[in-house]
Amino acid sequence: MPQFTIDGRVMTVPDGATVLDAAQLAEIEIPTLCHLPGRPPETSCFVCLVRVEGIGRFLPACATRVTEGMVVHNASDEVRDARRTAIELLLSDHLGDCVAPCQGVCPAHMDIPKMMELTAKGQFRDAHIVVKQAIPLPAILGRVCPELCEKGCRRAAHDGSLSICMTKRFLADHDLETGDPYLPPMDPASGRSVAVVGAGPAGLSAAYYLRTLGHACVVYDDREAPGGMLRYGTSRDVLPLKVLDDEIALIERMGAVFRSGFRIGEQASVEELQQDCDTVILASGDAKSGGHGYEGVDRGPQGIKVDRRTLMTSRPGVFAAGGALLPLKHAIRALADGRIAAYSASEYMTGVHPGETDPGFSVHVGKLDADTVRPYLRFGSSDSRQTPEGGCSAGFTIAEVQREASRCLQCGCPVASTCSLRAASQEYGAQPLHFSGARREFGYDDSHPDIIFDSGKCTACGICVRIAAEGREELGVGFTGRGFDVRTSVPFSSAMVEGLRDVALACADACPTGALVRKTDL
Ligand code: SF4
Ligand code: SF4
Ligand code: SF4
Ligand code: FES
Image 1: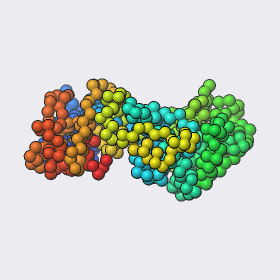
Image 2: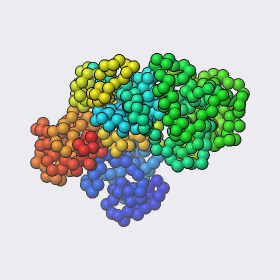
Image 3: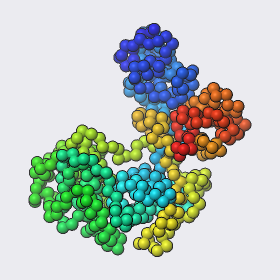
Image 4: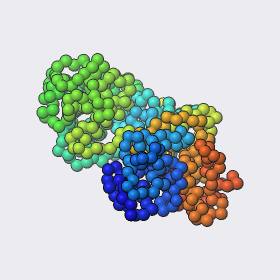
């Protein structure tokens, strides 16, 4: 029973225990990507590296037995750096997108593939709910959005990007036309209140999310009616008044209160607003030109200065968003800011983090051309880009929108929320392009009735190889090639359906990445 020290903690562990076993006993987290509990170590991933005093190199925790008096460092900066390097080496030979390119590019990070999937199936209400999670004014944005996401769409390399904006607009219009438009679930009243200054896109968005979190919210604006540049700076041909009013009315129905004829420094200062409520969100472009009333809120030539992550100003409890920060060309950016400011204000008031607005870590397949995009076309229909028969102002019909949505190649990764490689990448701040290599070849084997094999996402961890061997699969899976070029495949170039007859699901469940996935999880 050796006694050893890990991160300053003295422990006695069973004879033969590895550093990884010992850490698990002590509930100390060590990442692993090739470890199969209870089996001999594979030591192929090296993300479990630790520093053992007296040894001049890092050692893999999964393969290092604890000895008497050993001193192990698991959380030092150099250990974190070594693990990050191991992860980045794996990422340099990885072909996938954790987050679909369109979703990464969209300033509001809307889950576009999910919207497309549900729309293609005709589940318009559910698709609309996906939209509203990120974009509170989709009928409006569907008409004024610069379609940044479409510029990132993978299918553009083949026969034109998906009509993401027009699809979102269809869903929003369809919802408004039902006469029973969707209102998001709202938390019970929190007893907290927020003053939002500016009823343009950033302020409206902030109000929407504040109400979902149960906070009382008064939106002040100097103009007669809410909408900001959407009402006073947008052509009515582009954005009909009815669409604008209908979507703003939904935010009012959610309980936001609108007050017109208000200017900071005239009706009240920021300090006075703060006396009446718990937090303030400044979301009006006036901030840069307005004179007094902003005491304690640092401003620069562009607008209010903020912490880029939380959007809190130099005055505690006062946040800023949209045109108050800098001149914004696109309403979608203002909307995204409004959500961040609302979430930060909520966290400031309650101490509870309401959720992420950023989709998180992602590797990227990168830009594809007409040739390299071809293998991905299998994930979408062969229909060409749809044009509304009644013209753009009429929008899609039901048949058109379903055809358009079915073109989506579903570029995000189906295991993004459970992938161990992604989780480790996020935890260690890995940079996917730190070590850049040649793009790996795309390979997709869906011959098996229960699982798929997406070979570009395989890290050659060996877990499935061992499970197949233990399961006495006749062919099983094995490795070909050497070193960096080692690849997992079924012997004799056979398909997965031949290799994994009995243990396919066990392999998919144990695979640390999206290389082997149950078909039911796609
Ligand atoms: S397998 Fe993991 S790291 Fe690779 S694309 Fe999927 S989620 Fe991202
Ligand atoms: S094909 Fe679909 S998932 Fe892929 S980038 Fe385009 S819209 Fe996004
Ligand atoms: S396919 Fe097999 S070798 Fe590749 S990552 Fe998954 S479990 Fe590991
Ligand atoms: S080398 Fe230890 S888990 Fe992979």
